[in-house]
Length: 265
Image (cartoon, rainbow, N blue to C red; front, side, top):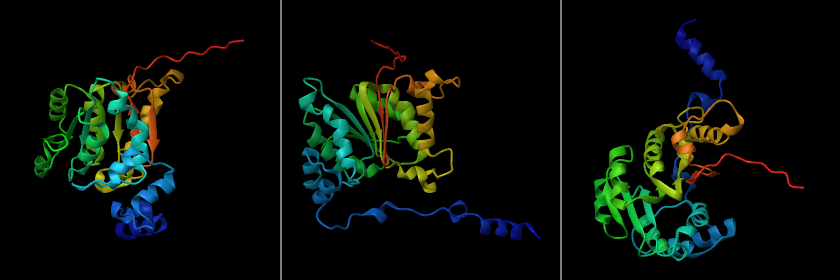
């Protein structure tokens, strides 16, 4: 039997997901009703608020968001709104400008004094500069560019990665930007369903899948209890909390303290 026939026989016995990757597109999940966008979000997640009002009434540039993101945004980001920060303006960086609508939403949500920057590799996004925030053109895979943007912002409190969704790019941005996030800040990465898509450098079985990296961060978080050391101390030494949701990972930035236990009679 020649090699080609042998390969074919082996492939025939394997699950198809191991032989041929299944194609997925976000378009498959486009909302088609019943009811309105507002009704769908309120019914499914039992949530409504200012951010939902802002999203469904967006009048200008196109914004595209998965419905379950809205209550998660509000859960994690509401404490950064102007009324909760006093005289200290938020410094917010969004990776990925796209059609400009997302920056408009964040401006309305965080208020007029927030320092809002968006970055994108697409030169066409320059037209959104100065509308709802400052736009800078460059790659999220370029550490010098990212550092220069943070320096121009005067630091950063919240990073939202809605950029290329390519595994390598996500890691580069995180490694570069997380050390710059202020204590008490957040680093949020969305659209991580792409971690399972080969066209974005991911895949169910691949080590490049971002959730495999998140697993290593969780091991680091629990390094007190095993002898394997830390794999990513530049992040884990300042990340006391990791939150995982459908397609979203949120990393807290704060001091990490050795655990202590007390028994009080």
